[in-house]
Length: 389
Image (tube, rainbow, N blue to C red; front, side, top):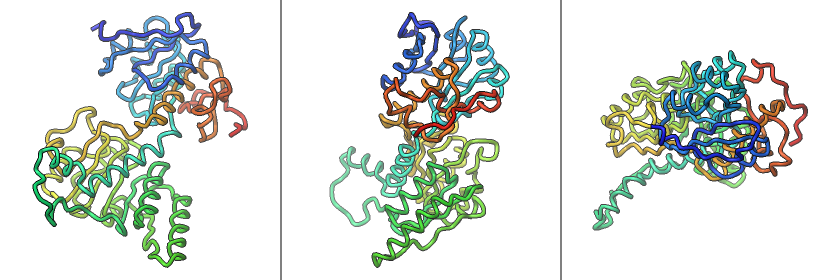
């Protein structure tokens, strides 16, 4: 097993030791850590790491870790990191449901994440899945590759027209609102959304676009509704795109009962977190309703799929690649590295949602701050004053 954990070491003379648990994207992340006088030990193994493997890699001295959503960072791992002198752990992800933040806080360890660079890429993937399911792109591609296209027929791969239909959004934060506006502006779709907070910025953008359409003599957007419940969205939308956080209230948000509420020919998209959908219930629903389609970027037992899911022609599955653009993944890795480097150098925590200076500015002129530390307040970490954007 030791051979599986072959490591590559960068800047071996570095004063601080940082463990990176997976190969990362680009070079910027490494430049950031080396500039902070870090020795970087990167695990080259691309498979799932066990808890014991991570503890062994942490060793007796480790100042910080850049880790992944595929690792369960609990009391045992944070205790091992603390014993090794660790001060910071960061996910290369905006989500951190794999991290027991309270356990890290108890050990005095800062926990970082990488928000602010995934919005457009994730929204684009959601839209890609909408288009691919609505127009049955994957089915048609398989049909062509199997040499089954002998003659054009009027009823060949009939799909769904999006123009003028209703897009439903569950969770209208940055990503959800970006999906909503893309579908409204691109396909003149009506919008209904549910979020515990009203998104006035999104609503104003839809209203302005509707006014523009009317000024051009075109049909304005007919409906913009902030729904009072998830159920209201499910009953009225032709497409439902899921963008909530994963917590106790959203685990299996889409269960058998709620799937039954949706239109028989609706489309369900998930680029949020796998457990938001009861995958067993989804398999059964899609088997029984052939006109119902789903597009999934994430899975309940990732990387595994529930039995039967991969056999369904009315489900499109992709391997958690919503953020997989070069700029986005390079930016995520850079933010993760900046979180670790900044905490180890005693810098304060960035207070602006604009993290682009950490992604695009020269490394030498980056703000001297940690881009995103989720337990900064609990640890009493200082805030960066008046960031210049």
